[in-house]
Image (tube, rainbow, N blue to C red):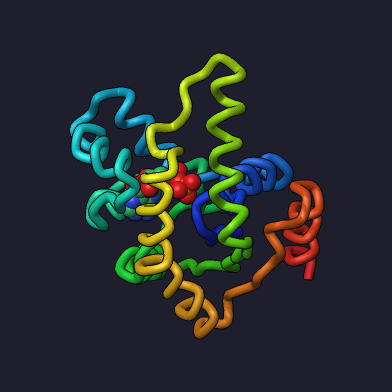
Length: 193
Ligand code: ADP
């Protein structure tokens, strides 16, 4: 099964993708996590991406498309995967369609997590606070200014994907404001249908 979780920053894509991957034995592919790992490791991609990510902007399409193209070739992806944070632009979506097509496979479903804009800032502030309370360092982009840029990027570049996948008959929307377990249940219901 090949799925995409779509939604604005703070919608809970990462939480749900991780839980769903474990429930179904799928691989979670988070471009955000991969890029943060590249920054930490100081690779060439990481060096290119660091400042962009910190500001809340989008890393160039060619970079993330390259990362995903390599990753889905790995044997562990053969059973299926959940994309979380990719695609984020129409160009990335078209590249993904092409990649899957060239492997003779297709995307099964795109699940949109719908949340109130008002709630996003609170969730992200909360995530930063909890990380600090646990003795960790919050993400460099979990602050009010970067969040504004991330939200703008979402509405400008990523939200058109809702129409793109609706037109393909692949879009399902669920209420991302529900408690985490309830969102998981709704996702399972969708997959069972
Ligand atoms: P969010 O909580 O904002 O959804 P992610 O962890 O998915 O965060 O991504 C963090 C940052 O990594 C983004 O703001 C962006 O700079 C970069 N990034 C991740 N995925 C992509 C992508 N598909 N295209 C461009 N940039 C990306």
